[in-house]
Amino acid sequence: TAQMCVCCEMGTICAADTKSPEVQKLIPVPGKLCHSAKSANPHFVHEKCLTLLQSQAHSVCPRCKEFSNLAQIDPKAAYKIPYKTYSKTVVVEGVAGFKATSKIEQVVNWVQAIPQEDKAIVYSFFEGSLDLLEGILVENLEMECARFDDDIDPEAQAKELSRFKKSPTCRL
Image (tube, rainbow, N blue to C red; front, side, top):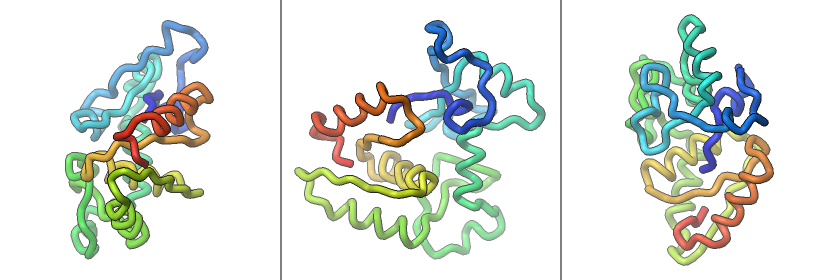
């Protein structure tokens, strides 16, 4: 997916003037703040945003915080849910991975049944569900996905759409 500053994306803090060329460079969020730092899909941030984020007490990557809220992670109850555990490399509050809902499980099954030469589009009003689904598809199923939503700028949207249309390995 297109890289963007997690602070800007999540609408939390952004200390950067994103129109300035020197600020547009993104760096990975360090492991002490981000659960995805060592995964295949690390999160990125503007350097100025990182400085501001690090200055806050109990700071954590805004994307990881949102992920734990979406996944409704409860360390005591996390292992009682009867579904498969996905994205085990992401550890949030002591819990490795997350359990998908039955709806996300159905989409995963549907995607796996798509013929190899076909492409598909998944549409949802719930971006959080798409975030979780994307994590499963990229990390667990090793699928290349294009992401097209209002959170990315028009130029990045055009690149993602072009990649989806032209790349034979980008099927979703």
